[in-house]
Image (cartoon, helix red, strand yellow):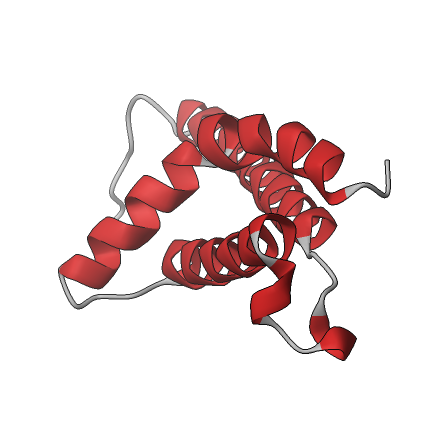
Length: 116
């Protein structure tokens, strides 16, 4: 698994299938000059992926001490981003259920008592 070619093959589905929603949202936000968290992740993972691709395909272009690929970082960042989005969606769903339950507790009628 330490072979850069094996790592490249393993990271391709993570980068381009699982990470596609993050990249699409991030690059669109950058294009609209309104960057946000997806933009940061898209920029960082794309840069790490492209650098690792250069290390894998043409390592002679880089100095000897800087020929380590960062495919695992790309996979980790995308995986943690997706996990965070799933947890956020679950929390929002739970919050929505709690708010609907609170709205259901309101009385159907109210009596106004005035002391004039």
